[in-house]
Length: 483
Image (tube, rainbow, N blue to C red):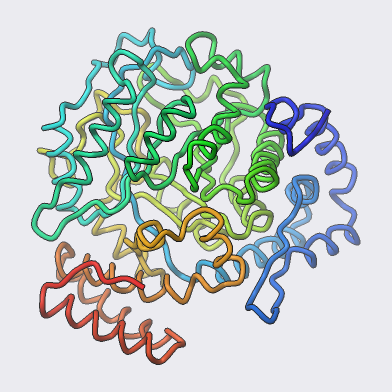
């Protein structure tokens, strides 16, 4: 039986409820009266506290996703853009993945790190190698990392992950510093989540891969990850362990996308109902080619137009949740979907263990890659590209470090007040990047953008303080101002 407040995976991600949802969506996909009501419900409304959005249930959002009327799809896109602008503006947060180890005891059929793959060399970074990777990332200009590791209790125990986090936070190279470490590791215990919380992590990220239990078990035939319930219930244990910010994701292409779409929204509803706060982020990766992995064996791949509609509908359904797209996607695809809801992207990414230190921006090792990187541009190229498109690349980590996480972040975001902090913070961290790392051409474009955008800070006192801080960053070598 479906129960969003249950702590049992098969009750809050209920198979029968998803099937009924998909049937309802198919039946009503051309019900224009209902669709107009759904769009009206989701539209931003001005209130005494600012701008608010009601969001949508998984069933309402599934109706929008099912609709194939071109005029309605344009309305969906327009609303997604409006919501994205209301809560995230033109800011795009930058991050990079850092692969620590590809040792893994699971046998996931879509991942090259699976236990039986003999084509790739196995590698685990030492703490000295972690340090060199972090310095290389700092020299690129990154402030936010997402660490990745396979599941292996012998080679990658929680103690190893904690040591790596401690090392990452300890490295201060020139003006570089990693200010937020997000963690993407296998489902674990409440006790271990408490340890991650105490280590000062940002977001705990765990991709469900697929919410269809039967498919999940076939795709994970052996290893700890085979346990569907333990994996699906991980976010509840993470929140019980004190982690405020959790990130959901599915790997589109493994199963039917409409099923996954309903499942991830049900998971978001469950977290909101039980813990009072939904996911901090939702990621939308697609299956890509990798060593020993051919994406063509999965017959549920989705084209770019469908992918864009999924992102727009997620943005409408969960308006306050950050959305992430990685370098799995190419430049053209990333440009198309950023305006529809994406708020975070990676740049200059390497998906190999030890993929940064010792390599130029143009070089990249392929022997331990988890997946092919479609967007292979340097961070500087991505930053300039974003600014040329009218976006503000942001390296901000202020909310996490000021304690604006979990329900505190969402309470501000839900009335649009988070932008009073985020806009000047984005500009100040962009100025840090321009001063310390950017090419002359990128710096020229960026400083012109900052000069324009700083005038859009509505509060006069805050605007003047931000202008003063920008001058101190440029001319006095000071860093890490934040509102």
